[in-house]
Amino acid sequence: MIKKGRSPWRIQRSVIYALFLREIRGRFGKYRLGYLWAVLQPLLHILAMALIFGHASKKGMPEVDYLVLLTSGFVPWFFFSQTVNKCMSAVDGNRSLFSYRQVKPIDAILARMQVEFVTYAVLMMALLSVGWLLGRNVSMADPVGVLCSYLLLILIASAFGTVFCIAAAFSDDVPRFVPILMRPLYFVSGLFFPLSVIPPDMRYLFDWNPILHFVELSRGHWFSSYPAVITTYDYLVKCVLVAMFLALLLYRRFRIRLVTTV
Image 1: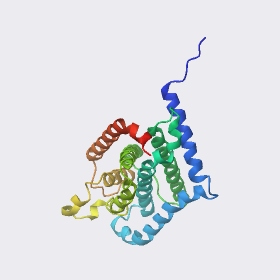
Image 2: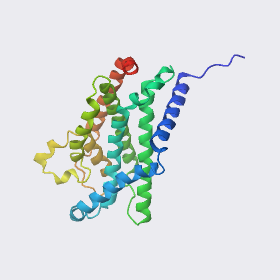
Image 3: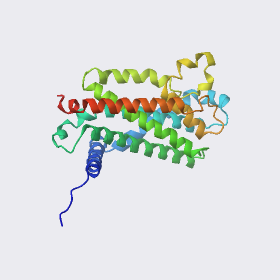
Image 4: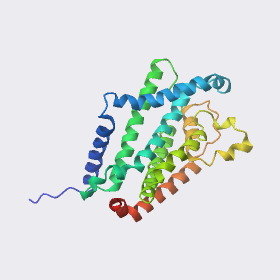
């Protein structure tokens, strides 16, 4: 009998898995406390925000555990920002591997996205487990709704990372521009305040932001007493579809350029 070769899907899956392991070793294997650093940054950030805003939050949201509230916002934010930044440099970081015809630029992007997903999923579970052991109320009012909102976040982060990765192939200024873009986005994403505290006539300055929609929706599903202003997925789903369409269209058009750009 003639043994058939592996299907393209199985080949791509093996390539992505190998790139995933390569990213894990390259990012965390060099340092003895490599995995710990992935936990310390968001943990210290959350604790600092809790110290600054925790007292005021007890008056505005007395039934919501503020540490859990911050965790539900900042961990996804770090996932989003890191996914965009890491995916943006995925092609340059793996350029030497593209001489193998099985390895495609999209594989490198997907591998880095998976590394960020695993890292921050483990971080989220670890922080919630510690909170539960300390007696915090970490239970979710609607786990399915939370998971649906997180799925949309994964898709939009991957799409933005792909778009900026392709843009970086045309301009060296893109990797410098993206961190500048992330700074104001951090302050208008509702990470440490609910949208309900913003006067209605000023909310238009914030509600164009799809990350704010994710934060409001996920917290509305997480906390039964959270004063959610945004309660529908319409805008967030539209942003995800547009971002995914643009990412796939640009990748289809410029995938050769990603490999040949020096």
